Length: 265
Image (cartoon, rainbow, N blue to C red; front, top):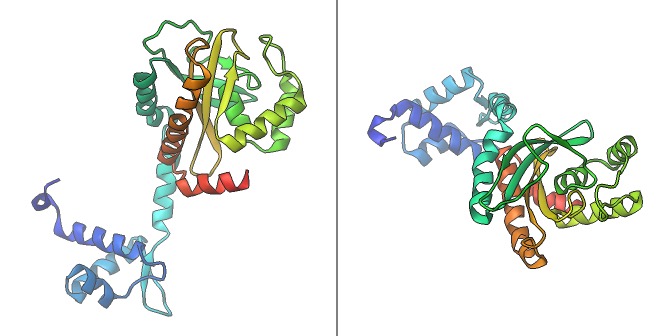
């Protein structure tokens, strides 16, 4: 928007909100007036209006102004209204354009993954997956990525309830070996399916987290093992991790959260 088309009082109010948000202990009227170069009476009127609506509050002891809890209420509503599929679509499109391979977006439901988006890429590849279909967690990269982000007792409960049926000769069916695999996934930040679900298909996936730090789903790239060589997987790993971070950020999860998660793993 052009500056001349802005409502000056609204613009000033937003400038004040931004300024106050940067100071943990809050700011006084005089400090604000000096920093944005408007008179104190105008600053006071704007602050009084923002206080009335709950966006700013005044510390009774210091007289300083700080952000009000109304922002928390509004931001929570925003985060709760975010549509994972809609937010993910541009990122999935980027992966498809860059790799020409099949790209999946899944969510976790009742001990299984559910495909909610699939981009087919430009290469010919026949897979069993389709939007709306369910798949097991123990033999898919997306399933592993999600399981590695769940509490240990929940993982064990899912494995006991769903079992670990053999889909190919490479499916991991030993619980202890699988739990060790999840430890590796947790440390590395990505998961692999090395022909464990479908013969001849290799996949790499990363988890997606929401604003509460809860795993919200996973994104994967799938291709024939002939193309998805070790060398190519090495090339894809940092890109997939970047996509996971970017998409999680769109859901309210921050880079600081990823750093902390890495330290705890």
